[in-house]
Amino acid sequence: MAYVNNSTDSGYFAGPDELQNLRLPSRETAKLLARSRQDMIGNELSRLTGEEYLEDIMQHMRHMEDETLPDANLIDMQREIQWFMRPYLVDFLIEAHAAFALLPETLFLTINLLDRYCSKRVVYKQHYQLVGCAALLIAAKYGDKKDRVPQINELNNMCCGLYDSGMFTQMEMHVLNTLEWAIGHPTVDFFSQLIVAEEADDREVEHMAAYLCEIALYHREFVSTKPSVMARSSLALARAILGRPEINDGEWDQVENATLLALSQQLHQPSITLSRKYSSPHLSRVSGRLADFLAHQAAISRRAEPPSPSAEPVLAAKASSIYSTPQKGGAVIGVADGYLTPPITPDGVHFGVADPMNKYVPPRCPVTPTPQPTSMPAYPQQQSQQHLSQYNSYSHDEYKGQQMAMH
Image 1: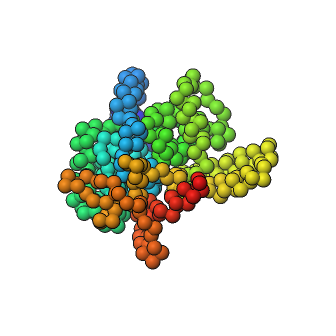
Image 2: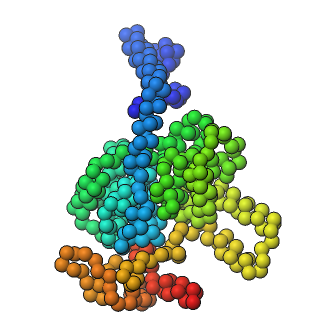
Image 3: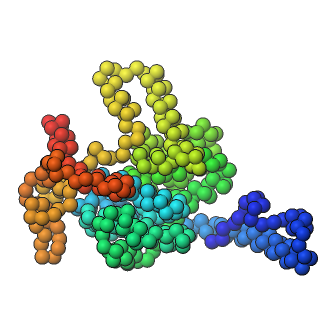
């Protein structure tokens, strides 16, 4: 597929008038003029060719997104990794993606590779972060700039040395073989760029839509959503949040309506890491705009219908958790053979016994004991590892408090 540079910025190529004003020898001026004409002709031919094959390109992309769409139902069958762990890993990948200044589509391709692998292979808790790092390496090598591809030692440092260097290479090869080397995937960023160019949306709408799409990465219900559907829904919601006029671009089907509604219900709990990322000026500070929009909508709701005394604490709790990490407190712990799967990776005889085939056997004893205050591990200094290590410290007290509240 050919990419067309429609930029009118004169900083890349000098126009004919500018070249004539330069004090250069006639032979060099003629060469520069000829090169400029060639570039202009090449850009026009690329544009015409792109329009001619656009329908075929889009048909191929639609086929690819169907073939490379993860199945959340298969990920549900994982015995050790649970959905409440996902936000911490996504936080880590977002920070690593920003640290290496990778392209936006690299992040979405990383999550796609991660989810596709988890829908095909059993993943142990201690390898969950390693799979995410391998997916990031593959995605960066596939479509990003060569000088920005992360080095294994850099990723290992971000993981605080939890893995050997050779484990990254082995996991990278295992992911590729599992996916049968089918890496290409039309990301939501690809479809968003097409819609933005067609509808002439401004940069703020584009950044808000990207923010909403990355919020969706944290939630199970969007794992099996097509990127084209997510792109259209996020742009429509971004226009509504920013007060832009609605664009009538054809009929909306039931899936797009359901995606738009589900996405609008997840806006009140974006990740702190993600909201910090989109609070920067070069991303139009859209996280602050979203927080202001939600606060304004909450104020309108309170004025329209005064809450009952019993509902006031609930509204206050929701207002205080605008930036809370999704699904952190509401973790659902899997059940295997009537016994609760321990939220901490099994280690030692107290947490279960491995069989000769190195398969995990659920323990026939109480779940993870309550950690003592003096034995709590110190959090690493690196912030990226801190987010991922939090799910391993999910204590039995939280689960016990939930059970007492239910009874």
